[in-house]
Length: 224
Length: 141
Image 1 (cartoon, rainbow over the protein chains, first blue to last red):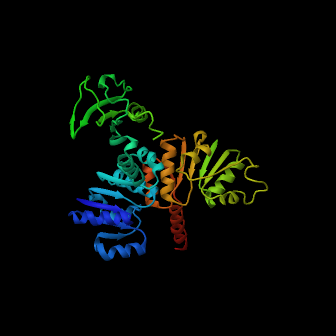
Image 2: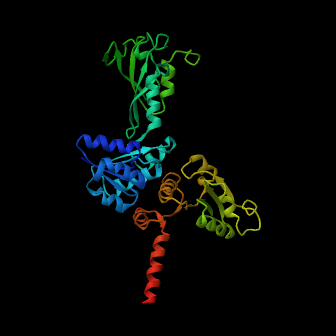
Image 3: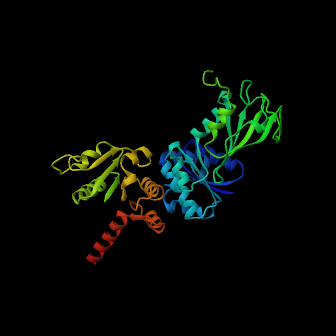
């Protein structure tokens, strides 16, 4: 695979190193001269000096034959433009953009720049996963399909513990698709009983998380 | 007309002043509070007294755009000192806020030409300079 990476910061440089180690052909583009010279001592011909938002710099790097273009500079507008140009002008099949300021995510979505990765969002997901009292974990977002799959842990004092699936009275747009118990998962029937300690997988319309949390979280959650 | 100008450097501030003088409603958004002073250069009263609006903020921020009045804007002008910022915010104005007329300054002729093909009204001062130099050289022979 031929990969072009725009931005030779810590993320870009390490990505280039990893992708080269895995046998890919990589060109890293860095616009700061001193940074470029530092990286060039290690990556040699795999790094080029220039502003990746300039068309001729992208063309010099061979954007026309790139299988993947990754924009990981520290500037969201630059990342957005690089990916937009790679995708729409040079018809690069796959792009990945870095979002530095998570508040800019809607603009990446508006302009069709997907996937877009934000370190803040990733760390928030990890916090959700690592802090069990939070209770709800995003497993998968199907943005185009407007669905998400989440996992909720059923604690001892959860209102859901001991309830049949059919009595859960979930909001419209939410469906329990699986129960995980003692390391095994199964697809529940309407009369399957949810037990404390279960992990429940649900598919949801976006925006229903709070309603779901309320059904599963113990009522003293905020006090805890 | 309601004209929203993002980026009040030499170009943006001059366009803002002349638009206001022409009787339009003008709102200016700039990150730098100092650019408010640039707006008032050559004026005998303050920008606000003359009827202008000024908001401190970045053109990617929803709150700043809203405060500057993007929801009412008939014209959106992107004239910050960054090509990529201008190209990004002008697409936001066009596609998200559906501002009727969007004009964007792009210094790089190559990007200006491509985005013009994509339907943006780009203005490229560099391209004008190139043509003027070439024509001046032609006159010399």
